[in-house]
Length: 247
Image (tube, rainbow, N blue to C red):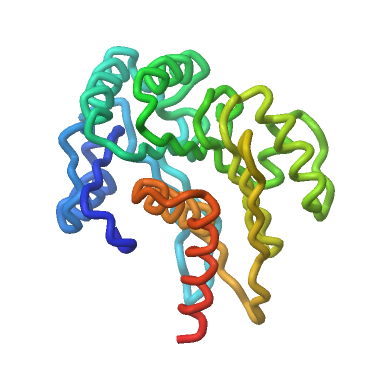
């Protein structure tokens, strides 16, 4: 919404609890459509990462929803709503933060079949555990996740050659583009036609990297949905960052 995307839908599950109700309130306040958001009264805790803060210092993180198990019937309703929504979407972001909530290996296969039926939609995937099973979609990974999906060790500071070599190796399995975030070293995009690289910005002082990957996903989705090519999108993103820091 902050990037100016006018039509956004939230598709997924929340619990009928404090955090689920607050999330729905925020969606309504922002104008996000929630007709395909499943609100579950039992057996589901709204997924949440939270850190208590005492006297300005963060305590140990407390996670909610890590033991969720979604009933197959609810998942079928979710997929039915997603199928209806896809006919009007330019981009679909598929995001997985927790190991156990919505998506399993079997359910990723259902998503692959559904994505194949909507070739005009851009699919952008950020999935920590089962991302290696997604076919033909653009997968966003960092270098550690890429190494994990390939079952190899990652160098302490992976260079561009390593990223291109291992990224193309992964693409042979997935059949889709790869968007690799490299921390301070920048971003690399790979598909069957091109490799686009943007160097990182040298920033000084203490940095809070929380949400950096989510920001990449949101920005990429907004630009691709607006019709920008990967090359134009990466150039726009680096220009926007520089403008912001100048101001």
